[in-house]
Length: 481
Image (cartoon, rainbow, N blue to C red; front, side, top):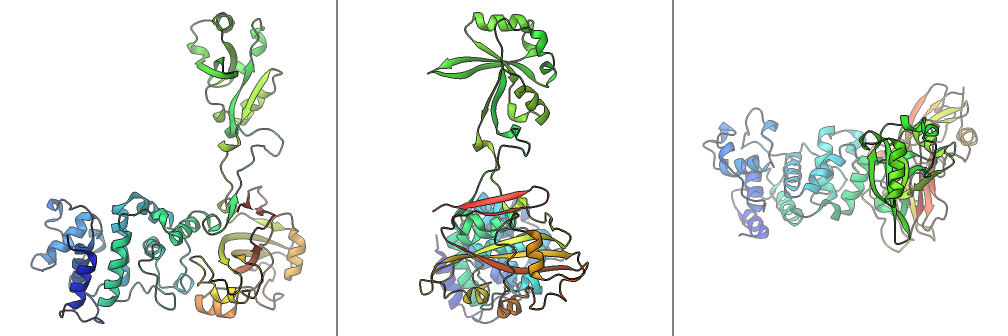
């Protein structure tokens, strides 16, 4: 099998295509067809795809990529037009689709990045369509194409021979690997799913949701077992309220190595005898009967509370059953600052900033926010910088930042409402909006302002990064070295 490098070298040496000339779709498809290591496809179903290729030298290569799923037939309703200049996005989509065929994790990565924030000026200045985002994200996240020097991807631009040659070599190294092996892609995926890259770039880890409700009762989803111990001579008429619980039945327990363990569960209607007789039979055969349900985590809150109200109730709770909190839980959830304003958070993007002189800032968003980071590089301690995108709707006639901060208090979170301004260079380069110096004319009654600010967190920060919204939705994350 010819190596990818050999194919690229042959292509680079070809006199038919000059290095800086725009490539055609046919030329690009032929190169990608020869570089990919995907299994040879069944060509029977694509023999007549793109009739305009019937007499073209690239027909076998293009149809091979269609059969593999790298080129989507529906993307070219007017024919493939093989001699038309290929665009940068076409190359990125073909390659991203190839990765998705090579391993299921890349297919999932495409789904995860539909709503991600691409670290490029085109996100806010325009130039990238929503449907293009996941393909660009996967190619950017794997490092196959990282963009132009100014951070743009220019998806509509043509591709030169030299650009494709370099991209093909990188593509070959990625094809068939796992999407989880790429740090930048992990960040882009997390942002797409949750609005933040906290887990993938920092050492802060989300805590699990508490298994207590606000009123002190237990949440059913945390319950591993719950039931009522049944004495041998219990008056079953006292159990009448509990017998109406859906799925109620008898749990038969016995001791194993000193611990009570479920032997079997039988619903009441399947006992084949009265409840009184079933209890007696359990004791006669050496089992301890409990009244309960097969899966207590699926109980309604009302029914769980009813079971636990019995004086002989038993309960086992496992915190590991609870999901982790996430920034996604608070995205777009209102936080009211008394009568002054209402805030909503949309994204929280972290960048790892080391001590001055100890290396470059880390993370897929480092260069995107680089100018704002530079103002903090003289700190003696390395930090995580958190860039937050939020919306504030003002209710008061006028509002300054101190008025908002005092109204919202410190109870709802930390580090989100300090309103540090992005550097002008960052805003100009990427089309971002930040809080202006004069806020009294910016936050006016009924105004709705969406903007970016940032805060900093020292590494080994002992307090959690946390936020609670008016609905009670919250997230909390602790530093875990």
